Amino acid sequence: MGKVYLIGAGPGDEELITLKAIRKLKECTAVMYDRLSGTGVLKYLDEKCKIYYCGKEPGCHYKTQDEINEMLVQLAKEGHIVGRIKGGDPYIFGRGGEEALRLIEEDIEFEVVPGITSPISVLNYGGIPVTHRKIAQSFHVFTGKSAAKLNINWDAAAHVGGTLIFLMGFENLGVISENLVKCGMDENTPCAVVMRGTTARQRKVVSTLKDIQDRAVEAGLHSPCIIVVGEVVKFNDELNWYEKKPLFGRNICITRSKEQSAEIRERLIDLGAQVTEINSIKIKFTSENMNEHLDKLPNYDYIVFTSVNGVNSFFDQLVDKGYDIRRINGTFAAIGPATEKAIKARGIIPKIVAEKFVAESLFDKMKNFVKSGDKVFLPRSKQARPYLADVLKDAGCIVDECYTYETVIGDLIDKSCFEDVDTVVFTSPTTVRNMIELVGLDSIKERNVISIGPITGNELEKHGISYSVCSEYTTDGVINELIKK
Image (cartoon, rainbow, N blue to C red; front, side):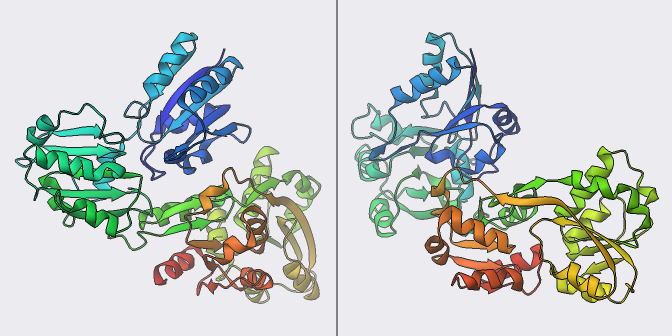
């Protein structure tokens, strides 16, 4: 018998997930997720984990609740560690209680991992604090999904004071406002609707109970939305920290490998963007190819790295083999600042560093150092351009290439994650080719496209994709280009 974790994934911003949720997701052998939890959390799963979409969308139910309950039971009985990923918190209008009771009927062990709930977090991102001293000493959360039929005590709701919050109630916005006014709430009470809160598609309409439905419809809002009624709505502009970020409203797709995506993803999120991470390439390390070169390492005049992956594959193999790096006498060279940083992290200061992330720039630096007869070791990707090796040989160098890794096409768990993307960032020709295979050429052409440099740009041109190119071929260059646009 397996075990089930009912996991709250937060309201939409992929970083609003708890450390415990991440730890338990890494243990799962099967997960079930839905629309509101998003696909960003799936990055924490083991590659072998089985993934099932069981989302329920308005008017289009992929699975009934009973079917979801039975699927949880079945997977657990097959021996899986099951993660039931739910948007927000599992027990707040998420039917997590129903799922837990079904598991108890079958004597299946389960745990609940609480999540950050949307009534608080979405309003936070909209500049609206749910409580405020002397203004709102309480808040009250209702489901508005079937407000016309629910046994809500509208008279009590209208007079209870504090902040009123309605989830899943956009279709019943008129019913909600009408009943509150009918039961005595001032029609001029501040009211707001926040759509798709904490994501790039967050939109907010602020008005009064009297006009909120008309204003929200005029603005084109639609589910999922949160409705908030009360004086705290007046803070929505003054405390509006999220929507003032420079990249707010942008959904930017980064296409690098999982290992290389973390830095730029975090920086973009800090600038207000929602990041869709599609790891279009996976790194398959073949560091064992270095074994035949280990005895010759002390004899090389130059050790040349053209990527961070090349650095990591090289040094990790030395550690694995117990090789004393002090035996290496050669000069280290790096292509671009990211590769330089990776070498420095290993305790080595490279003497030669190309300013731009292209092989031509690295050779322009190296030609002032190398001479005929110099021995050069070049650990790099199997798919690397031959340019650098060729020009070094033309300069009379003896070059040993070693393929310490290769890139293979990545996996795309859910193609729908690309639907909300407005900008795609490409950092190599391989990411271009792989993304075309994963999401389709026409889908890419419909988006803004940024190329990290001219080599990647050449690949985009081959496929007729319009793009802008960064003035600096680095992560900083990509971010500057995004802010410009």
